[in-house]
Length: 97
Image (cartoon, rainbow, N blue to C red):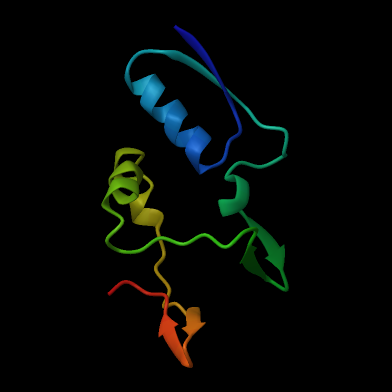
């Protein structure tokens, strides 16, 4: 079956991978000049800044397994989070427990 997927963000690329693995003919259409959607980065001051606030935790097994299937897991860089949630007068770190 021929399948067209609109958007080369994380969901579109994951869907394309799954459909390809099951033998479908897949085309991904993206209007931006880059892939990754809101999970992509932009260069800022010699570094990279997230286009949207996206993160992974070390216990996100489904996405980590997909990264391993795509042979990109070994390129993953883990950074300590400096982000948290403030509620009821206390800051809770946004990190893997």
